[in-house]
Image 1 (cartoon, rainbow, N blue to C red):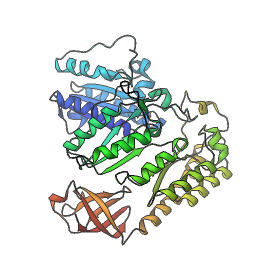
Image 2 (cartoon, rainbow, N blue to C red):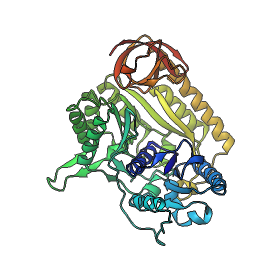
Image 3 (cartoon, one colour):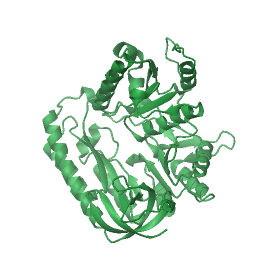
Image 4 (spheres, rainbow, N blue to C red):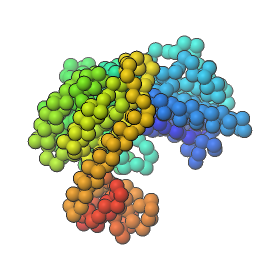
Length: 445
């Protein structure tokens, strides 16, 4: 039998899709080239923005039409499945199965029923289960892998629906995380990204020894652990809440060569008034001081961030504070978006909503400024020699190789095609910049 995934939203969704794909592969299912050719289509959904849910609704309509032509099964999982769980079938009758965030243990029963040509009957009442971490989120043939270490969020930022669909914070066993790293190393993975809605609030206690682990202690243990096999070389993590970045964590990042020096540090806004309305629990000065401490103690630090424009009540002065912050910090990259009202969040009821055309105009100004900063920083790296993980032949020119730097920047090697380099680290001389991609010359492995 065949399956096809469509995953929307964050890296955690991608990781969760990969873990379900591992289960399907273990049952000897095969990946179809498209949803139109699959026996089972799985939509892994996002609820962070209404646009993501609108897109999923469109895809459901597409597959509803497809099901009139042939027999296939449509399953919806993820945050939208959790948010609309009780009414999903009424709103989208073409969907066969809805698997909420805390129902991962249902997948085996559902897949077995499909294999046997029968419909598995979901319970009338949604079962109350804990969030289950998969043993692996590996994607076959990849040199990079996501490793979820915690799920959920206790912060309740007023614009964010995540705590309502993913629940309270729960951390994964340290031993399970280290065991997954061994599996990934055996499969040739060279780079991992630790995932969580707020990774630096990780907290787990060993029931036997009674020892407690924070995120800094986990990150340090991971660095020591991967040294044993020497396969995994780069460790990333996201996302971090600025209020939880401790001096201990800064020291670990600075001390451990395996921890990449590109840190995602979402600020969301540059105005204290808006930060307070968002319930971010830090001031702009707090954030600026944190950036200063990190840059003093972490050589070669690069920062990326999230910027939310158009929050209810935002003024031109507030926006100028955000633009000023971009100029001050000079992020290497930023994920920039405008406010989307999400029913169920505290901000949904706030007055003084910003008109869509104003939000879009303000967002455009933020994007143009940040893109200019990003390009300036990238141009300043031309001529430098940097380590690069080689991933594959170049998509645009199969006679060249493609990879990425520790800062996550794309690199194409001029006139270099030697498959023995794929999956390995090399030192590259950055020659020029074309759009957002460096062209480079390989120095040595």
